[in-house]
Length: 233
Image 1 (spheres, rainbow, N blue to C red):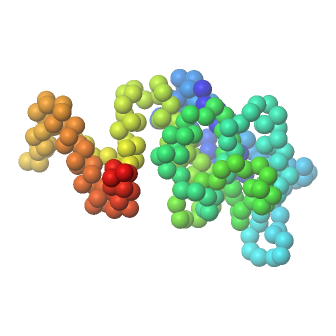
Image 2 (cartoon, helix red, strand yellow):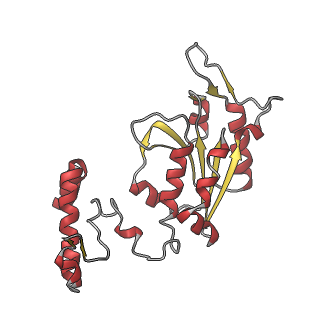
Image 3 (cartoon, rainbow, N blue to C red):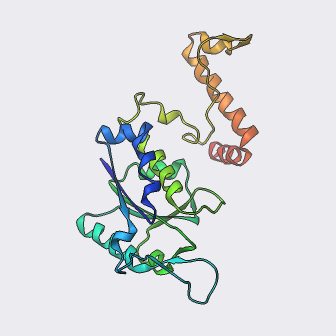
């Protein structure tokens, strides 16, 4: 089982999405255990304050080190964690390879930033990895953290009904996924490619591979160029 502890200043943003779809299935099957921690519960301030003004001036508020250290130190005193992750715009881009790696871990903490950011000492002392979902700034790290949980949950063995489903997703083989079709074979005169209804599995496999290459070349030339480099080596 994979355990993920989510630390947030606004934990109400996290609960509902974790109770639906694939993540819900993973939790019900006992393959994923998710715990949400309200950062205010660890504040030493009588008003449960968790932020303060930045030294040197400037706009915005910064999450203080005290509640974060208190929360993470409590968690790490109870079990060993493989990763303590901070979701940040300046982190490494979270991609499918990172999701694959995290799916092999046993215990993970994800700290969701908020306000202007978190005290740098938290990052220097506690954090082992920092991830970004792209070159965009959000109000907090809750939505990016949910994306990480969802991406990792579907990779856990036994979560998906079809064991091959996750293995054929976009990016798993350094390519985008090929086009997919379902019934009817003819919808308003638009027909499914004949090869997919041929029953010839080898031809279908070859068709999907070529379409994945073509789609990647057209939509993501950056990924396509990396694919070419790896296959030329």
